[in-house]
Image: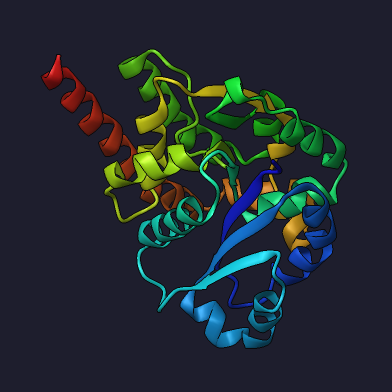
Length: 259
Protein backbone atom coordinates (compact mmCIF):
# COMPACT_ATOMS: atom_id res chain seq x y z
CA UNK A 1 0.00 0.00 0.00
CA UNK A 2 1.36 3.43 -0.95
CA UNK A 3 1.80 5.90 1.85
CA UNK A 4 0.01 9.25 2.16
CA UNK A 5 1.32 12.74 2.90
CA UNK A 6 -0.30 14.93 5.53
CA UNK A 7 0.40 18.63 5.86
CA UNK A 8 -1.26 21.92 6.88
CA UNK A 9 -1.70 24.68 4.33
CA UNK A 10 -1.51 28.22 5.66
CA UNK A 11 -0.64 30.41 2.68
CA UNK A 12 -2.82 33.53 2.50
CA UNK A 13 -0.10 35.37 0.55
CA UNK A 14 0.09 32.66 -2.11
CA UNK A 15 3.81 31.99 -1.70
CA UNK A 16 3.52 28.21 -1.47
CA UNK A 17 0.81 27.45 -4.04
CA UNK A 18 3.19 27.64 -7.03
CA UNK A 19 5.52 25.22 -5.26
CA UNK A 20 2.62 22.86 -4.59
CA UNK A 21 1.59 22.99 -8.24
CA UNK A 22 5.16 22.18 -9.29
CA UNK A 23 5.55 19.13 -7.05
CA UNK A 24 2.01 17.73 -7.43
CA UNK A 25 2.92 15.37 -10.34
CA UNK A 26 5.74 13.88 -8.25
CA UNK A 27 3.47 13.56 -5.23
CA UNK A 28 0.94 11.69 -7.35
CA UNK A 29 3.60 9.27 -8.53
CA UNK A 30 4.84 8.49 -5.04
CA UNK A 31 1.94 8.86 -2.62
CA UNK A 32 -1.56 7.42 -2.62
CA UNK A 33 -3.10 10.63 -1.34
CA UNK A 34 -2.47 13.96 0.31
CA UNK A 35 -4.47 15.00 3.35
CA UNK A 36 -4.31 18.73 3.93
CA UNK A 37 -6.05 21.31 6.06
CA UNK A 38 -6.50 24.84 4.77
CA UNK A 39 -6.53 27.72 7.24
CA UNK A 40 -9.46 30.12 7.19
CA UNK A 41 -7.43 33.09 5.98
CA UNK A 42 -6.00 31.02 3.14
CA UNK A 43 -9.51 30.00 2.09
CA UNK A 44 -10.66 33.63 2.19
CA UNK A 45 -7.76 35.08 0.22
CA UNK A 46 -7.00 32.19 -2.17
CA UNK A 47 -10.42 30.78 -3.15
CA UNK A 48 -9.37 29.88 -6.70
CA UNK A 49 -6.36 27.91 -5.49
CA UNK A 50 -8.46 26.07 -2.93
CA UNK A 51 -11.15 25.39 -5.49
CA UNK A 52 -8.66 23.67 -7.78
CA UNK A 53 -7.42 21.49 -4.93
CA UNK A 54 -10.97 20.50 -3.99
CA UNK A 55 -11.74 19.31 -7.53
CA UNK A 56 -8.68 17.03 -7.55
CA UNK A 57 -9.55 13.74 -5.85
CA UNK A 58 -5.90 13.13 -5.01
CA UNK A 59 -6.24 15.80 -2.32
CA UNK A 60 -8.43 15.25 0.74
CA UNK A 61 -9.04 18.88 1.68
CA UNK A 62 -10.54 20.15 4.91
CA UNK A 63 -11.13 23.87 5.36
CA UNK A 64 -10.81 25.17 8.88
CA UNK A 65 -12.84 28.04 10.28
CA UNK A 66 -10.66 31.03 11.04
CA UNK A 67 -7.03 30.82 12.07
CA UNK A 68 -7.30 29.25 15.50
CA UNK A 69 -4.36 28.05 17.62
CA UNK A 70 -1.81 26.26 15.48
CA UNK A 71 -1.81 23.16 17.68
CA UNK A 72 -5.57 22.79 17.36
CA UNK A 73 -5.32 23.10 13.57
CA UNK A 74 -2.62 20.44 13.40
CA UNK A 75 -4.50 18.09 15.71
CA UNK A 76 -7.66 18.48 13.64
CA UNK A 77 -5.74 17.66 10.45
CA UNK A 78 -4.04 14.63 11.97
CA UNK A 79 -7.36 13.34 13.28
CA UNK A 80 -8.88 13.79 9.82
CA UNK A 81 -6.10 11.76 8.22
CA UNK A 82 -6.01 9.06 10.91
CA UNK A 83 -9.73 8.42 10.57
CA UNK A 84 -9.89 8.57 6.78
CA UNK A 85 -6.84 6.46 5.96
CA UNK A 86 -6.72 2.66 6.15
CA UNK A 87 -5.33 1.69 9.60
CA UNK A 88 -2.10 0.19 8.23
CA UNK A 89 -1.38 2.99 5.78
CA UNK A 90 1.83 4.90 6.49
CA UNK A 91 1.19 8.60 6.97
CA UNK A 92 3.97 11.11 6.42
CA UNK A 93 3.29 14.08 8.69
CA UNK A 94 5.24 16.85 7.04
CA UNK A 95 5.21 20.45 5.82
CA UNK A 96 4.69 21.80 2.33
CA UNK A 97 7.74 24.07 2.29
CA UNK A 98 9.98 21.15 3.33
CA UNK A 99 8.41 18.91 0.69
CA UNK A 100 8.83 21.55 -2.00
CA UNK A 101 12.50 21.93 -1.08
CA UNK A 102 13.21 18.20 -0.97
CA UNK A 103 11.48 17.57 -4.30
CA UNK A 104 12.66 20.72 -6.05
CA UNK A 105 16.38 20.44 -5.38
CA UNK A 106 19.23 17.96 -5.68
CA UNK A 107 17.74 16.09 -2.72
CA UNK A 108 14.80 14.66 -4.69
CA UNK A 109 16.22 11.20 -5.41
CA UNK A 110 17.42 10.64 -1.86
CA UNK A 111 14.13 11.87 -0.38
CA UNK A 112 12.05 9.55 -2.54
CA UNK A 113 14.39 6.63 -1.87
CA UNK A 114 14.05 7.17 1.87
CA UNK A 115 10.26 7.38 1.65
CA UNK A 116 10.03 4.14 -0.29
CA UNK A 117 12.59 2.31 1.84
CA UNK A 118 10.50 2.43 5.03
CA UNK A 119 9.74 -1.03 6.40
CA UNK A 120 7.10 -2.14 8.87
CA UNK A 121 9.71 -2.54 11.60
CA UNK A 122 10.99 1.02 11.07
CA UNK A 123 7.78 2.65 12.28
CA UNK A 124 7.21 5.07 13.85
CA UNK A 125 10.11 6.97 12.32
CA UNK A 126 11.39 10.53 12.69
CA UNK A 127 13.44 11.79 9.80
CA UNK A 128 15.83 14.05 11.70
CA UNK A 129 18.06 16.81 10.43
CA UNK A 130 21.59 15.53 9.93
CA UNK A 131 24.56 17.55 11.12
CA UNK A 132 25.05 18.60 7.51
CA UNK A 133 21.41 19.73 7.29
CA UNK A 134 21.66 21.65 10.56
CA UNK A 135 24.75 23.50 9.34
CA UNK A 136 22.63 25.14 6.63
CA UNK A 137 20.26 26.59 9.24
CA UNK A 138 20.88 29.81 11.15
CA UNK A 139 22.82 29.16 14.34
CA UNK A 140 20.04 30.51 16.54
CA UNK A 141 17.64 27.93 15.09
CA UNK A 142 20.12 25.17 15.86
CA UNK A 143 20.91 26.28 19.40
CA UNK A 144 17.35 27.00 20.49
CA UNK A 145 15.70 23.89 19.01
CA UNK A 146 18.68 21.80 20.04
CA UNK A 147 18.00 22.62 23.68
CA UNK A 148 14.82 20.55 23.57
CA UNK A 149 16.75 17.59 22.18
CA UNK A 150 19.34 18.00 24.92
CA UNK A 151 16.66 18.13 27.61
CA UNK A 152 15.04 15.00 26.19
CA UNK A 153 18.36 13.20 26.36
CA UNK A 154 18.77 14.26 30.01
CA UNK A 155 15.25 13.25 31.00
CA UNK A 156 14.69 10.14 28.89
CA UNK A 157 18.09 9.02 27.59
CA UNK A 158 16.96 9.47 23.98
CA UNK A 159 18.24 11.82 21.27
CA UNK A 160 15.10 12.91 19.45
CA UNK A 161 14.00 15.93 17.44
CA UNK A 162 10.92 16.96 19.38
CA UNK A 163 10.46 19.88 16.98
CA UNK A 164 10.43 17.46 14.05
CA UNK A 165 9.88 18.33 10.41
CA UNK A 166 8.90 14.88 9.08
CA UNK A 167 7.39 11.95 10.97
CA UNK A 168 6.15 8.67 9.47
CA UNK A 169 3.76 6.34 11.30
CA UNK A 170 0.77 4.08 10.73
CA UNK A 171 -2.66 5.70 10.66
CA UNK A 172 -3.77 3.39 13.48
CA UNK A 173 -0.86 4.50 15.68
CA UNK A 174 -1.64 8.15 15.04
CA UNK A 175 -5.30 7.58 15.93
CA UNK A 176 -4.27 5.80 19.14
CA UNK A 177 -2.09 8.61 20.50
CA UNK A 178 -4.10 11.68 19.50
CA UNK A 179 -6.38 11.58 22.58
CA UNK A 180 -3.27 12.14 24.72
CA UNK A 181 -2.21 15.22 22.72
CA UNK A 182 -3.62 18.16 24.67
CA UNK A 183 -1.60 21.30 23.92
CA UNK A 184 -3.06 24.00 21.71
CA UNK A 185 0.23 25.44 20.49
CA UNK A 186 3.07 23.98 18.43
CA UNK A 187 4.33 22.03 21.44
CA UNK A 188 1.76 19.40 20.47
CA UNK A 189 4.31 18.04 17.97
CA UNK A 190 6.58 17.30 20.94
CA UNK A 191 3.64 15.62 22.70
CA UNK A 192 3.29 13.29 19.72
CA UNK A 193 6.91 12.22 20.05
CA UNK A 194 6.54 11.76 23.80
CA UNK A 195 3.66 9.36 23.24
CA UNK A 196 5.69 7.39 20.70
CA UNK A 197 9.20 7.59 22.11
CA UNK A 198 9.36 4.11 23.63
CA UNK A 199 9.13 2.66 20.11
CA UNK A 200 10.27 5.44 17.83
CA UNK A 201 13.21 5.14 15.46
CA UNK A 202 15.22 7.91 13.84
CA UNK A 203 17.03 8.47 10.57
CA UNK A 204 19.26 11.47 9.93
CA UNK A 205 18.82 13.00 6.48
CA UNK A 206 20.42 15.80 4.48
CA UNK A 207 17.17 16.63 2.67
CA UNK A 208 15.95 18.47 5.76
CA UNK A 209 18.45 21.23 5.06
CA UNK A 210 17.14 24.77 5.49
CA UNK A 211 14.32 25.36 3.05
CA UNK A 212 13.68 29.10 3.40
CA UNK A 213 16.23 30.37 0.84
CA UNK A 214 14.72 28.05 -1.78
CA UNK A 215 11.14 29.00 -0.96
CA UNK A 216 11.85 32.74 -0.81
CA UNK A 217 14.29 32.83 -3.71
CA UNK A 218 16.99 34.36 -1.51
CA UNK A 219 20.74 33.96 -1.29
CA UNK A 220 21.30 31.38 1.50
CA UNK A 221 24.29 33.08 3.12
CA UNK A 222 22.69 36.51 3.11
CA UNK A 223 19.41 35.25 4.54
CA UNK A 224 21.24 33.19 7.15
CA UNK A 225 23.15 36.26 8.38
CA UNK A 226 19.90 38.24 8.58
CA UNK A 227 18.16 35.57 10.63
CA UNK A 228 21.12 35.08 12.96
CA UNK A 229 21.17 38.82 13.71
CA UNK A 230 17.42 39.02 14.28
CA UNK A 231 16.05 39.17 17.81
CA UNK A 232 12.57 38.56 16.37
CA UNK A 233 13.74 35.25 14.91
CA UNK A 234 15.16 34.15 18.26
CA UNK A 235 11.93 35.11 19.99
CA UNK A 236 9.93 33.22 17.35
CA UNK A 237 11.90 30.02 18.11
CA UNK A 238 11.57 30.50 21.86
CA UNK A 239 7.81 30.96 21.51
CA UNK A 240 7.40 27.30 20.54
CA UNK A 241 10.48 25.82 22.20
CA UNK A 242 9.67 26.96 25.75
CA UNK A 243 6.22 25.26 25.69
CA UNK A 244 7.99 22.13 24.39
CA UNK A 245 10.31 22.29 27.39
CA UNK A 246 7.26 22.46 29.65
CA UNK A 247 5.71 19.49 27.84
CA UNK A 248 8.83 17.37 28.35
CA UNK A 249 9.10 18.28 32.04
CA UNK A 250 5.42 17.57 32.62
CA UNK A 251 5.64 14.20 30.90
CA UNK A 252 8.75 13.30 32.90
CA UNK A 253 7.02 14.13 36.18
CA UNK A 254 3.99 12.06 35.22
CA UNK A 255 6.16 9.11 34.29
CA UNK A 256 8.02 9.32 37.60
CA UNK A 257 4.76 9.40 39.54
CA UNK A 258 3.64 6.17 37.85
CA UNK A 259 6.84 4.32 38.80
